[in-house]
Image (cartoon, rainbow, N blue to C red; front, top):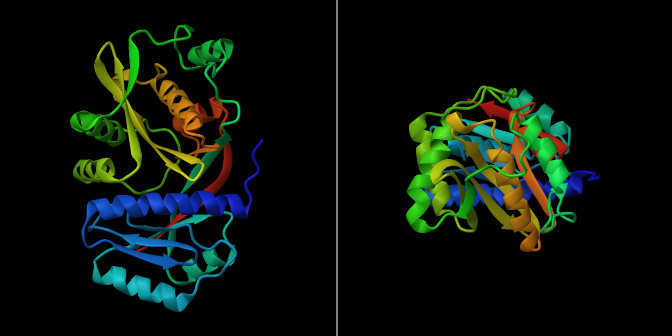
Length: 290
């Protein structure tokens, strides 16, 4: 059983901040990355989903003069300031943000699991059959015709199309937030994501047809699982479960000790991760100043 204290949450959030900064730098040459309150304030191109302040406020209260300078810089770039603030950060920081006109627009859950028990035989066949049944499958320990491959450069356009289509058609579960992005914004973001250093990309096929995709980044013992989605016509068949297990085994083989994934609260993605041994570590509040 993992216990998430401020130290672990800071480690995870700051790894996330480094990933977002790499994505932002891949997205635009004029990206601004500023240290702030132990984390990073990251602003890339206009309207980018990676524009955010994250990894901040663990054991310290925001310096409002420094925050005011960030707000002024982002205002000059025509961007709202967006915070992803961990529930394990200093509580007073929420008061600072609401006093300055930030509004709460949603939450996200940070899920995690140790990789100690992940080996060649992970998961046991009985658990696999039970999971297949719970997903509405036949109970078979494998999905007929399913393959997972690491994406080479020539397959990036296929991977990108699957990810964009999957995220543009969400499954409607979970509370999420009021944020939404156009298909063009998602397509641009995934194109930038594909160029970010250190990101491994995976493509799922059933009988040769691309049906799902995901990605993973390793950072100092943490495996960051991200970008997992399935095309609408192939959902509820266990594709996400297969992607989760494959990345967990890959992370363990790479000597990572902890796997983390961000989900919408109460979503099917959260349920899928919990079936694979993940637990809720902490929540992040999403706050925006327009």
